[in-house]
Length: 130
Image (cartoon, one colour):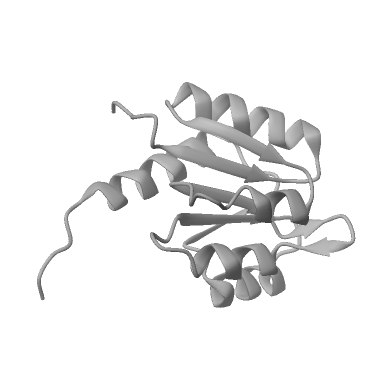
């Protein structure tokens, strides 16, 4: 799929290794990628709203739920992917806060790519009348 400069994606993860690998995968898929390693920088990157947000649920001493809540309140609302190695409690918190998808660490990078591609494609479809 061909992407435009408007297809910005942010990755918020305190693990530089995970963030770097995720950046490579997302850039190869055609996204303009920005990275934050802490909650405050991640919040700053939400303006203007990106197309997709990937956020780790545990950012050192901080929690990714606040970033998910603020991203979900944006207009237009970005697609939100939460990632965590903490299992079900983090999953419930992420979905309740507004995440569209949840990936459990460790995950194969091709799974991240596929999830990003799927969410991007869903956002491209015109709204259907019910």
